[in-house]
Amino acid sequence: MRVGFVHGVMNTDKMSILGLTIDYGPYGWIDNFDPNWTPNTTDSEGRRYRFGQQPQIALWNLTRLAMALAPVFGSDQPLQAGLQRYAEVFVASDRAHSAAKLGLSRFGDEDVELLRSLHALMVQAEVDMTIFFRALSEIDIGAPTLAPLEEAFYNEEKRKAAEPLFVDWLNRYAARVRADALSPAERHRRMRAANPKYVLRNYLAQQAIDRAERGDYTGIVELLDVMRRPYDDQPGREHFAVRRPDWARHRPGCSMLSCSS
Image (cartoon, rainbow, N blue to C red; front, side, top):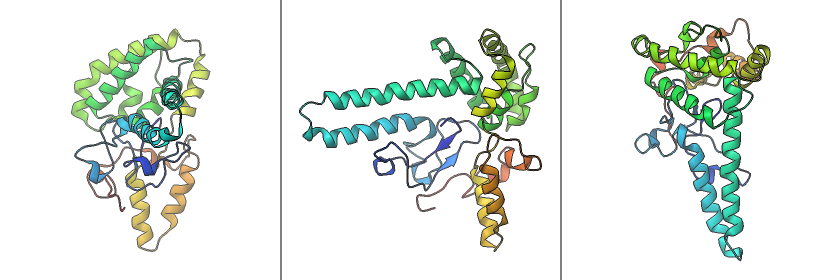
């Protein structure tokens, strides 16, 4: 979830005893940030397995496991403790990831609203998750503007409408960064290590598949090579790090997939 991954159908038989998600079918990576997005066509109505619901689905799966194990326990207390442990570890991990993505030494209760308001703005203005967080490390903390982030917006009208709100948020964020313990260099390093430049966007995978179906496998080879180093700048491969093109917004394979994909 830190890099926008959505499993798409994360039910109990798609999650191993180790907590690993398996059996990928209709999976995908977030383009424009949307907690309600699902890559699964069969989940498009209820959106049970949508991006923002994944932590709750994991807990639900673990609860079903606990119920199955309950008959061999003398008390449900150890099982309840295990479920509580999951919740605690998830929150701690999520806060650590949020701190890294924002370039902060720590993510406290006072930072929850800052991130929540950013997420709301990103949904409202249709902002690319990967591009935005990668570019956030480049803003001038002394005088922040929207300029380094403009490539992350999918819709110019929405960008213009939301610009005053984004500028206000950037000023609040800059003040928070200035009060943080990290040096500018460490902040930049930390953010680039947490925010990839390249993710396996659905349309990129579909383009490689289309070429392979015509007998050209070089697209798969190059895409795989790019994704081996998602945090590195790779000169000459900038086209793998751009917004999803408009033609791919609703094209099958580039937007949503079926369970048999």
